[in-house]
Image (cartoon, rainbow, N blue to C red):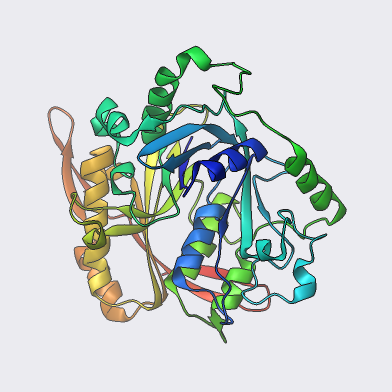
Amino acid sequence: MAGYIFNLNSMDALKRIVQTGVYSTRFKQTNKKHWSVHHEGTFADFLSMRPGDNIYFFHKRKIYGVGELISIDGDCIHLNYPAALSPQPEKDDYSLDKMILNEAESDKNYRLLCTFEGSPNFFIKGVDMDEILKSNPPAFRILRAFWKLSFIKIDNLENRALFDKIMKENEEYIGSVDEDSVFLFDKTIHQRILGLRTSNRGRYEVSSIPILEAASSGDRIRHEMAVESAIIDSITNNLSNNIFGRWEYVSHQVIASPFKPIDYMDKIDIFGFRFIPGFETVSKYLMIEIKKDKADIGVIGQSLKYVDWIEQEYCHDYSMIEAFIVARDFPDVVIAERNRAGKRFYTKGRPGRSHEWNGLRLIKYDYDKMNGILLFTEI
């Protein structure tokens, strides 16, 4: 399972969030009719969440845990009110009786939320970041680059290492009901979510449709991040337009370069992996590079660099990698470059046998404005 680490500014916030089992990111009110890229990136993070993923919180060098995302009425993510993904909702759209988080009108700036509970407990004792990183250095890739973000997603191996360290430090408190050692849980907001969702069927469900609508100009999409959000939604929820296949773990903006100043790190647009059915053994790795407009010839080399990174850092076997470039259009010169350069040659076994990887696939997208979704066609 994956893990999410949320950045908080106070211990009071930590206590309130953990005790209610609800986390939401606050969005500043926008005067624009479309979202900014960083908003769309946060939406993409929420869309990738799945029940069973672990939850942690970071505050002043320490990480606190452990929680687990849980479904309420079939999902672990929810709209705070029915029009929450509209950049400029009408006042009637966020009346207090429609909001899940509704202590004040300003809570309209909470747009999406996720629901969780302690698993096995949410411990009051946090663990210092240095102690965590030292506990299993090879496991931590993403945590080392936690910088200027409201939260990050970590994969199953990194999550396991973090979970183990927090559990070891809190072993004596496992199963405790002592409020001096664990945060006690109040189900009030969870019950409110269930009531609102069941009495307003479908209106609190999270979808990439309004994100694309806000990012569209005619049949074009303004930001790559909006396309990214829609693809993550398609894969995570296995929508009818999913051309990319089944993937148990999906994340985005994943580091794909040696450690260096964070602002200069290369990042894979969408990264993931799937397991062999019935086992937690990784079968394949996913790489998707996205261009919101026409692809240029440079995207071939960029994508192959990410393929090489995955081979070197994760699987050491090109046959385990499925790679896609998604763009609005592919000129003939780009297709020709894929056919010429989009290969990797490698040797396996003893005695060695030569193999060829040519798994770089080109996917053209169109925006279906009527239905609010992306349509994909392989070149």
